[in-house]
Length: 213
Image (cartoon, rainbow, N blue to C red; front, top):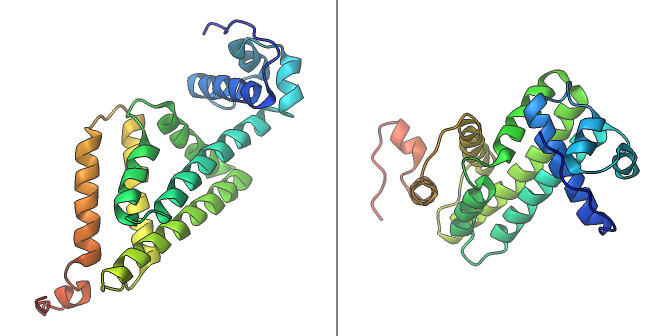
């Protein structure tokens, strides 16, 4: 791992991004517990003191990476909720959030999930962020179904299932799985539309044919 060239007089946000980019790289290469702040500083092309000026310790770096990732997700889904075509926007938001299969954020997603298994504080932090995303998604699904004249019986459960698919894709991408994003968008939108506007699931399960339009 070769350190980046030293840069000076960057604005605070740019410096912060420089450090976090290096931190993510180091955490993914060596793992959280094996990574030292000195290595992060060297990768960023900075002194250790410069890193500590912006972040108290390695834990603060990890938490900042988590916060930035969920802030990005919240912004994407907030835009989808405000769209005149929220379902299409939501599908596009998922593709935008996933990015490319090789993006480092997929492995970071797996890394934080693994750490959270034994870290109660991190687990609670992740859980809170996931619940906020699910709430926003549920609102979008409920609004779309209501506008289409087919109220959704359980928007929250629908959001959980859809998000689980996205989480599963992140895990698959982290392991090197690749798939065309345009096809994922088309299939995902079709699945959402047919699920939100299709047959009454309770009637289907009971063997009663749904009423025709």
